[in-house]
Length: 505
Image (cartoon, rainbow, N blue to C red; front, side, top):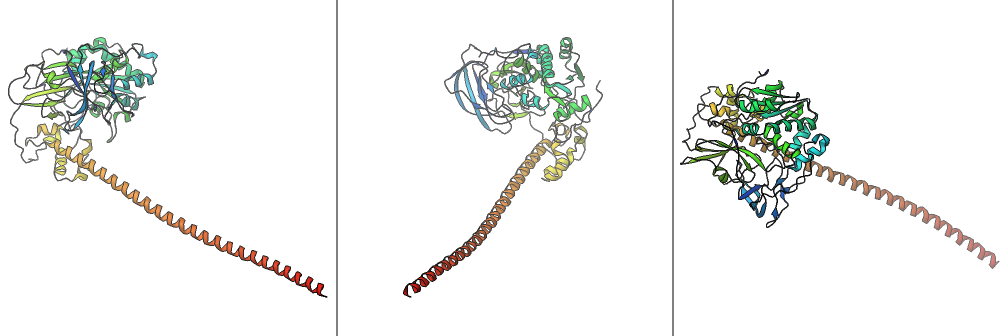
C-alpha cells in the first residue's frame, strides 16, 4: 500500500484487453528505414555511404556531442538510400534516414568487447561508455540519452524503475517483463552499481499480476523492492512517481535528479542489460499493436526501422476508415498514414475505426477539469488565459507544470481540446522567451558597440592629446637644443673674431 497519494488522475480500463500477454518475435523485415533523429538533441550524421554493406549492430550514424546516442544497423545488408522521410512526429517535418536492404543473413558485427556478466569488474565510466555507444535512450517515449541521464543522477539515493505503463491499451512493457524478468532485475542491479544508489524501487500497477509474480520470483536482491501501485492514469509521470512512492515534491523547473532520484523506464533497463551484459546495442524494441480496428491486440519484438505496414501485417485489421496514432490514446500522436518506421521511442501503434468527432461547445464552467488534474493545476483558468493569449497570466498559473496528460480534455463535457490550447500557449511562451533573449542579446550587442565606440573615441582623444603633448615637448626640446647650438656657434664666432683681431695687431 502506498504511503503517499496525489490528487486527480483517471481510472481508465484497457479498452483493448489481451487474454494472454505474449511478446512475439517476428521475422526480419526485408528493408529498414532508420531515422537519424531518435533522441533528444541534434540529428545524428551518417558515417556510411550508399552501396556499402553493413552488419547488424554496426554504428551507421553518430554525432560529436555530450548526448550522442549512435544509430545502429538493425539488419545486415546494403545501404540503398540516404535521404529524407517524414518522421512520425506531430510536427510532420522531414528528417534524414538511412535505408538498408536485408541480405537475409542477419550477420552481426563483432560485439565481443564489453563488460559481460562480470560487469562489477568494469569501472562506472566503462559502463557509461558502453551504454552510450549502444545508442540507448529513454524507451518510454521521451528519447533522452540514457548515459547522460544516469550521469546527472550519479550518487542518487533512490533508483525508480517505471514499469507502470499507465497509458490504457499499451502492454509492451508488461510483455517485456513477463518474457525477460531476469533481464529486468539484472538491469536494475547494473544501474545500482554505476549510480551508487542505496535502493531501487520497481513501480508496477496492480493490473499486471503475471509480471508482478515473475519479477518477485527472480528478485533476490534486498536492495530492490517491487512496489505495486493502483492502476491509475498518469501514475507513471516522473514527478507523480516520486510523490506517490517517496512523498517528494519536485519543484517547478527541476527534475528527479535534482532531488537525488533516478527514474528509468523498464524497457530502458532491459536495453541496458543487453548492452552491458550481453554486449548488444539497441537494434530492436517491444511494440504494442492495438486499437478498435485491430481484431486481437498483440505485442511484437521488432527490429528498429521496420515499417508500420510490415508490423501491421502480423495482425488482423477490420475493414473501413481508420485513424492511426502512436504512443498512446491519451498522450499519443495522430498520424496521417502508416508510412513510417519503428524508432527507439515507438512503444505502440494504434489503428482505430474512424468515428465522427463530437462538436466542441462553449465551456460551461463545470470544474470537472480541475478535479482530475494530477499536478493540481486549474485547467479552466489556464484555458481562459490561453484562449485570450494572456500568456503571462497563464504562466503565473503554472502553465509550464502541465504534463499534457489530457485528463482535463477527456472529462470535458463540452469536448474542448484543452491541452491543445496549453500546448499552443507553451509554444507562444517559448517564442516570447526566445524573442526576449534575442532582444536582450541585441541590446547587449548594441551597448557593447556603443561602449566600444566610446572607448575608441576616448582612446583616440587621449592618443591625440598625448601626441600634442609629446609634440610640444619635442618642439620645446628642439628649441632649447637650437638655442644651445646657437649659443655655441656664437661663442665660436666670438672666439674666431677675437683671434682675428689679435692676428691683425
